[in-house]
Length: 428
Image (cartoon, rainbow, N blue to C red; front, top):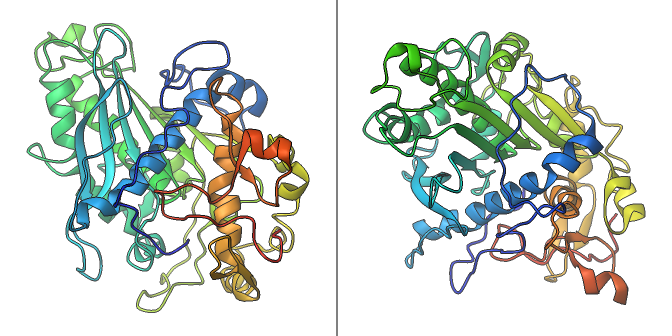
């Protein structure tokens, strides 16, 4: 990932799609459909036609959170940019990173509807890595541990430790929000809790969704996710209690647990993982590599994806699909889960330099990640929002027609990367 940059001075949230409308005219975000356990692969076109606008809105808000997160740690902090129709209920912080450099790091935003007459969703948005080096250590602390609060099987140790901090207690953190708005609620009851995260945030969202479902099952004393008399767990008789529906949307989500964990998770949480075919981060973990200071796991680890995967390709891009087709060139054959896969991927990343639009030299891996790991999702999803342009779609120099409708990948202040494409020489 690119090094973090703070765009707090004069930064404004990205608002293409902030008041998003599905191409059918329906306002988003919409609650996800309640379904039984999803198949491992979902039909991309049908699912995106139904839910793509909601995914686009969620992705935009995740990146607004990513751009805002460093601001609260700066000398001139700014308030969180609430999307229209939503109120910030809580910011969930990582309370301790490995080095101790930061002690309160905004990582997730919990949003409630401004009016329960419009929506009764609770949204938990979780950003990806913003502090290079510091949060890389969370990702690479991938030994597996058992933690019954999250479910069966084994889970990622770094994500477990971080999720524990975000979960908090009944006085602070996500648990306190759930207790206030659901367990102890007597009006305006929440009917669904939707987690959405990118990259590291997808892994954390997986664990937090799993823990939320178990917590709600205990507090609401219900045997099934039901819409009947949702919420008000504490104040309704047991015969009328029902826990809110818990779901997850992950974008390039990091894997969080073992096959046994995934099987248990899939029985309890409805999850969609949106994966770009050329994004290597979706196959992130290996048992044979760790950065300096973190030991390689003593025993092999086995991670798997959860929920139903929605896989899209370069041909699904709104603009410059031929350029997108080349973005996986040279890296698609590298398997990061192989014995030396992580080292091979790092060697490929650092083998060539590109000058990005800001005029700075960047290694190929950072340029690749900006496109494949970040822009690809926004570009593909923007086509499902009626009032959005083809954001972040252009990799090569655009012609007049393209520039009238689309923007360059990487031209999105106040986020963690700015002005990446087009590069010299052209990439890919």
